[in-house]
Length: 158
Figure: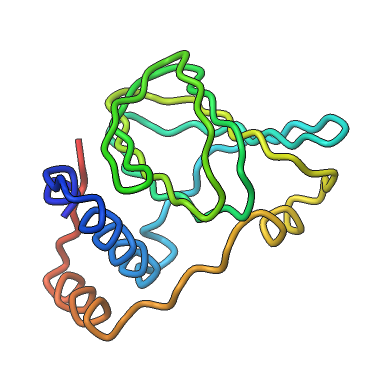
């Protein structure tokens, strides 16, 4: 499915596929999901989340409620953002608009900073303040999930 998404050129089709894939992933049992390595940094009015995305991982981020900075500290990959595919590399700095989702296929280990404007320092409250709730999976997505898990074959991207 990731390969199919990466082949699309129409931004609405890319957004639609990523949204569907996000709902699909919510169906996965927790033991099949991996948490990203996050470090949290705070200064007055600023929260920085530092993430490590391992080579070969495909990560789908949440939609954030605020406009914020992103900095690729190291590594490279292909990002889906605002319906467009773009290469990202160490040293890239860009602004994410509010209500946009980013997804990344890491070609090598990627360290990325998300820099948010907030005074909150409680991690659970930050999730609530900064991220939108995710939509529930559709019946079609649940059917597809059940077909895949019944065959016991889940995709891994190298």
